[in-house]
Image (cartoon, rainbow, N blue to C red; front, side, top):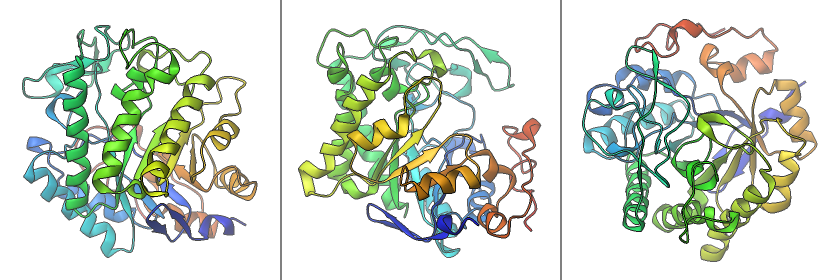
Length: 360
């Protein structure tokens, strides 16, 4: 019934055995020093039947961390930990890319365990609360507005993170431009009130994302760099109104990044379709982007297969379904019932609700 999900597809330089993608999901299991743990190795290994795993958001620097027990990719110990994850996934025949995520202003300092700055495009605090180490939501601190020197420094941190991911054996990286984190903060007028080349109209608010994508493409190859967007998503204080002009400009800039350098575009655009406005999000992406599209957001095997058949997307990503079903592709193929996540233990830090879900 869902045969189209099991056909191979190529996303840039990454060849996938099927079109079922594991979406990035924060799970709060990193160890001391934000190093991937044995538990994380097993978690990703269990889910290697996906055509592609996209890791949880991984900070490129100490400033990039805002949540409890999220992993980094800027120390040798972190690189070594991720190398063990990559090796386990590859041993099972899977592919894995790393989502690079800098939270910007979405920070609870007690989640870090160390002192680091809180930076954003403008000195505007995130209105949404964020869970602290005990899980109780607290207000975020007001960030410091980034100077242009900060912008170029953070860009090089992303470049180093991309190189570190490849050194760990990770197949590529995904730039997180959604959910109200740093890149999205530059994109959105509610958080970006700059009057320089990185603020103002949509064509200038996309400049930071374009800079990051271009420098990472130069560092590891455009065909190993993906981008994640979520037009109209109000999460973490973003203004959801009228997303089309902004994301059309972003997609056109991203499309040009790889093509202008090598003639081969970026690996993919990963699109969270919020369906909160009248905008046909996937149609807007297709009209501004020439590369592969991964569609996401509450899709089922049936609706995902339909999007592939209609050529509105090239692959489908599943989030929560992969939490409770480590063998999700096998269950889809056999039309077996899907287990439901243990929501009480999503972020508790141990194996319960993480690596203890049974396979068929």
